[in-house]
Image (cartoon, rainbow, N blue to C red):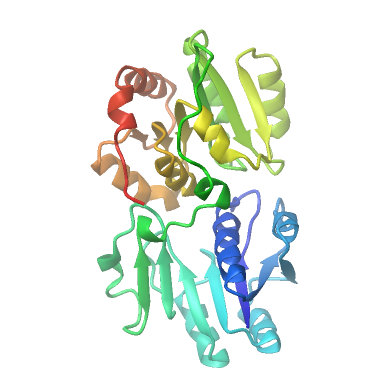
Amino acid sequence: MKIIIRADSSSSIGFGHISRCLVLAKKYKRRGFKVLFACEKLEGNRINLIEEEGFKVHSLKSNNLKEFRTLVNKLNPYRVVIDSYRIDYSYEKKLKKNTKIKLLCFDDTYEKHYCDELLNHNVCAIKKRYKKLVPKFCKVKCGSKYTLLRDEFLDSTKVKIKNDNKKLKVLLAIGGTDHSFINIKVLQALKVFQKQIKISVITTSANKNLEKLKKYISKQKNIELLINSNSIAQQMSKSDIAIITPSVTLNEVMYMKLPFIAIKTASNQEFMYDFLKKNKYIVLDKFIDKTVQKEFKNLIVNYKKYYNKQVKF
């Protein structure tokens, strides 16, 4: 039986949708399903990453319902998975009505959906918020119980690798595309701690500001740049502190029990931001250099307190 996953990636969208859909795709594959992806070829996409993982990709010319419905009718899948902010309730309802397929939709921001299953796999997800947002027949799956973690995290022991360097190891992961362009700003803010820390910056080749980032880092002695890394779990195991966005990466950082500072860079991170603030984690509404410096110092001083904060997976 076939399953079609409808998701996109680009320099502006980022890679979070594709990343978590690949985790789900591998789960389906292990259960014997044939998994196909349907993606638009947007600027800065990572379709190659999907193909490298062994999944066929059908290219779409647009986000038009008619085009995708034609593909679904042609392939006749058992289920369609949708992970896109650009596809709404109306699109989903028309797709189901005209194809009769089972539909699973991802959601992060408590939007209205018309589907058989809804998945919000973030640690902050609250099931009861979907009561009036999905049809009665929809099965809602929420929270850390359903968090989709890449194999490298599940294979990890979560035991911190001993850091023989006397300097604190900091992992900076502000998204694969750094659409808010704050990597360099964060690095500049942390410069006052340069004698105490060593920084690893995680990014991808789709980062539009990659050359500027390379140029800046080339002049620094305590910073390394990791591009398209496939060993994020290992990097987290080596690290003492992470600076991230309240996004998919937060699920991974919490799973690895890594103390962090989260900086909101997009509106779809609002619910994660609220969850962190309510539970007294270090989270910032926006980047302000002095605030980053203050909270970083606070994190160092109260390291054990933040290390012991846990979410059950």
